[in-house]
Amino acid sequence: MPAFSLEPEQTAWCAELRDLAAERLRPLAEKGEPGRVNRLLLTALGELGLLERLFTAGALDLCLMRESLAHGCTEAETALALQGLGAHPLHRSGTPAQRDRWLPDVVTGRAVAAFALSEPDAGSDAAALALDAAPEPHGPGWRLTGEKLWISNAPEADFCTVFARTGEAPGARGITAFLVPADRPGLTGRPLDMLSPHPIGALTFDGVPVTPEDVLGPPGAGFRVAMDTLNLFRPSVGAFAVGMAQAALDATLDHTARRNAFGGPLKNLQAVSHQAAEMATRTEAARLLVHAAACAYDAGAPDVPRRSAMAKLFATETAQYVVDTAVQLHGARALQRGHLLEHLYREVRAPRIYEGASEVQRSIIAKELYTTAGTEETTR
Ligand SMILES: Cc1cc2nc3c(=O)[nH]c(=O)nc-3n(C[C@H](O)[C@H](O)[C@H](O)COP(=O)(O)OP(=O)(O)OC[C@H]3O[C@@H](n4cnc5c(N)ncnc54)[C@H](O)[C@@H]3O)c2cc1C
Image (cartoon, rainbow, N blue to C red):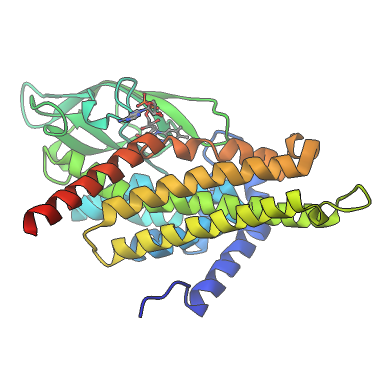
């Protein structure tokens, strides 16, 4: 019998995480500098055991953590997610020596991780990346030369998972993943100032030396390492969006019940209450898609790419709609610097672009649909 709701223990855990986000993590987030890594916040996530859970739990738990933290503290949610994104290739494909060196510090929050795939000329088309890994003329190893752009946690991260071209082969072939510690000679970076407080930057590689001991996974299979990571994280971007949508909806229900206009609370106007109903319905639909995609991932189902793409697409687009509607129903106060909705309005935009823009998700869904339709036709 399929279940369309969480187990009571999962619901209780989510409530606990929402309280932790609001009461313990939000004050730490407020002490941080927008756009910079907040090490206090990351350490707190380590102390709460949530960073370790990134690597011991499945996709559904990851979604529940991201949704619940986002509800009360988007900065904590993002710190957790970025640590997972940057360190997942190490956890999944690292050698015992690499894992022993880095994972204990990753799960306590002492070491900050980053996932460096995008480049100035390779964003959605990630397989076009050009960071050059030139073989050392004498002895094993390579020298990395080029640039990575829009890298979360850069340039402050203590190590980066870096995807570089080691072979002549074009596209996805010939790409190798490396674990590059931040103190390697020739590696520099600069922070970027974004709309949201997201810590992000650019990295420049000027002949950065890497050895076979730095390779993550088989040489030449780096694109697979990147896609494995993105497949796990894609539904959870939707969970982040659902958490923000729920926070905007809760704020709207509270505000429209208390704000009086035309002789009564705003909620008495059907034009207002119907918008709240629409926001709630779309948020719940997004949540169900996210949970279904995460459960499919955990079950090793064959339709994960389609479900994950649908979840990410629908949830991020829904959150944009819900936050925008919440701003409308709050009026001017929502646009005042420091208001929850002013913050969410800035936060909600980027997830429609990163880890596969909405248009890319539609292409994935369409490809899967026509592949399945073609298969059914030939087997009939
Ligand atoms: C806040 C934030 C954090 C990020 N963090 C990281 C990170 O940690 N690591 C990392 O490697 N990268 C990161 N990125 C980069 C992100 O992955 C890229 O921005 C994303 O892949 C899109 O690439 P692009 O910005 O170059 O846009 P482009 O690839 O130039 O695309 C621009 C637009 O063109 C359209 N488009 C592109 N391709 C298609 C298509 N096939 N079909 C239809 N329309 C299309 C879409 O509307 C798209 O938004 C981050 C970005 C942001 C905003």
